[in-house]
Amino acid sequence: MATAYHDRWITCTEDAVRIRGYYFPWGSKTVPYSAIKSATRVPLGPLTGQARIWGTANPTLWANLDPRRIRKGKGLVLDLGHTVRPFVTPDDPDAFEAALEAHAVPVGGGGGKVV
Image 1 (cartoon, rainbow, N blue to C red):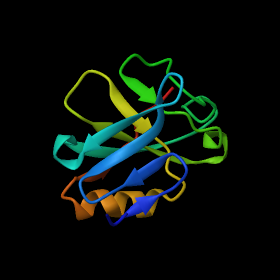
Image 2 (cartoon, helix red, strand yellow; image 1 turned 120 degrees about the vertical axis):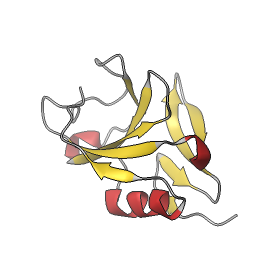
Image 3 (cartoon, helix red, strand yellow; image 1 turned 180 degrees about the vertical axis):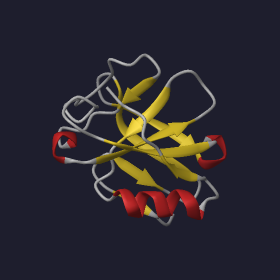
C-alpha cells in the first residue's frame, strides 16, 4: 500500500488518515478520506494550542499526542461532521494538506483558535 504522507504521528494511506496517539493510552484513530468533510489550517501560538501535548481544553477539539507540537506553528482541524473534531500537527503541514487534497478533501485557511 502506498503512503502519501507519513511522520511519527500521522500517516496518509491510499484510503485513510491514521492518527497515532489519539486515544488513551496509545490508541490510533483511522479516518477514511470519505469521512472528512474538510480540513482547516489554524495558527498555533503560546495561548492557542501550541503547548497542548495531548487532549484539549476546548470540548469541540481533540489533539493527538505530539510532544513536538510546542515547536510547530501550524495545525489542522479535521471536520468529520461530529461535535468533536481531530486536531493534528503534522511535521510537514504542506505535504499533509497536499495528501488530503489529492483525495478530494477541501483544505482551507482559518483564523480560528485552538486551545
